[in-house]
Length: 420
Image (tube, one colour):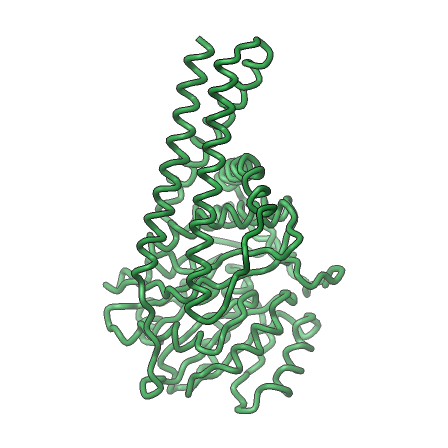
């Protein structure tokens, strides 16, 4: 009986990993056919770039410097900083004096934050109030994104098509070397999320653009005033206007920060909580995570029983299935990584070479990644309170939200590449 159970469980986990790899390969082939659109200089209408900052991200300086050096004729940058005591304030003023030769950067301090939305959403609505009358496009940039010189032209290019209401990039986590387990777990989870985010056209506000007219037609300013995240409401609001969201193939932006295992768990939980609140596909993620974990735990349980009972056939079946499924999952991860590398290449960037040691670590961390995925899915189902950049938010009355606390960001011990 144990032998038959081991064979069946092994076949299921192998088949699941094979499906995962097939989806990743299909995504890679689809991506290879994607082409970007660059806004020609003659069509570069006035664009406002909005950044909301709380705390000083490791790439904040590169992000702000990069956005001030765009190959784009007409644009302004509206940077809303949480507080004058924020560690980002001094850096922003220094960068403005050093790099803002065309006086594009407007630095605002956040004013009277609402309790009914996140500080980021409040900052965005505040920035919109300061846009010049001739602004036609609005772009959003996160402080953990370092934009290259043609970022804005690539992001606004597809908006020349009137059927496109929003243009989005995506994010890839490529932690520095040496790499801890938390960073690789976050990267591995995000690799899977990347595929479905792009397939389902889920916007990412770290690199996103839309027409000002679309923003006004969708009533997004009012929606953001009662929202916990900025990109969550975008898809429905834009699609309700009969428009679609376009993915920009050259804008899978590389995040090179590192994090701990506990941070990775909190981060994945928060991402899944946002998905629960705003995405129709959330329960597919929960079903997938529960199924994956049950099958994996079943195989490990049978493996232990096979050792205790001295059943070599069951032991061989489980061991082989776990090794093969782990190998296929690792393969799928590197297929997605190749897509991110191709995106970086389109803009003249590079991820870096893949070492045997990093490949081995990804393989060994597949079970841990699955467990965190499952744990985060369960935690997100009942999540009533979120702590985000030292601020507590009450989600118990969602879709209504309440900010519970506020204080200026407290800088922690310096680490030049750690996520905050």
